[in-house]
Length: 227
Image (spheres, one colour):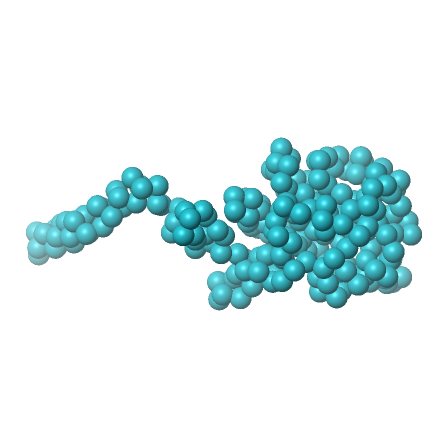
């Protein structure tokens, strides 16, 4: 019986080798292995396009950064960027978001086509001067990392209506403000992009508080930068 089992196993291996090995070798020779990645597709011109889901256009904004410069969507045209809502005096989730955003930035610091937009939800306190100090305090560097402030009503509209992210004031919570710990990913054309879950549903935003969310957004930034 053992001999028959070995013969059967050997036959299966032989058939597998005859059918699949030549195909694998051919894909390697043609540099075609990555084309099986479900998050990428090959266009007719041979370029690689990510299969990340498109949510829609990011909302328009015009805000002031830590250097006193006006920053708009056009400032990020042709760039892949990550956007978050925060406030500098946040005692709860913001320090974690700051740390994780630094991890993201450090991975793409030398790429001029990558940027970050950190928008405060407490502009009364977070003046350009305060945001400049905050950036220095947390060691935030990067040619395209802007800490942004402006009119609170407009900022809340950008967050709640534009990105559908929750922000709000609440005197009962630590720091007096509430917001999500999510990061938005925007491509070079200004579209909000995301991956899908195992059931094919768009995740929409990335968890800025968890290691897995940071890992995912870094992978997807790389895909969008390659387009």
